[in-house]
Length: 207
Image 1 (cartoon, one colour):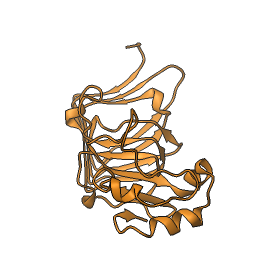
Image 2: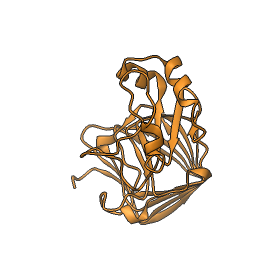
Image 3: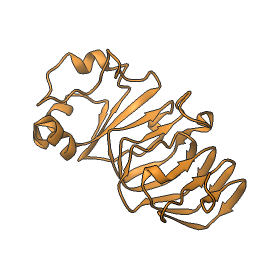
Image 4: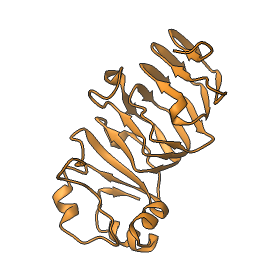
């Protein structure tokens, strides 16, 4: 670990404001054994410079000031938190074997209604406790359990709601998948309107 990195560990913080900024080659570490209560956490750093391990966030506001891509929140226990901002390819919850401190991972009672989630996954949690973002975001609940139902019908463009076979098949721990319709429509060669019409067929897709 380089000297000069910013490390928050082995402490409890309440009603504080943390500004996480990218500074030259400095990395930011949250945890281990960090607890934040009713804090505002402002993230202005790319995923490559942010590391979370065995940290607990309770009733915190987490504000993403730049798009956070391919980041794992699975080293964090997130309880009653509110997220704002854009995330792509992020994971939440307990993901067994994924990095150090995965057993600490949790997400419950959190509010994502003001977040933009695309290609994000929720692991080993109860999504019924979460306030998920609405259209143009949409979230497939229980993708594996509903897999046969989802793949038994046609979808617009090349959109595939769930992968049941092969090296990229869904993890058994994945309980929900979130997408951002404008981005998905562009990737799959379809339109937002066609996607919305297709997902309306299922009551287990939140939109």
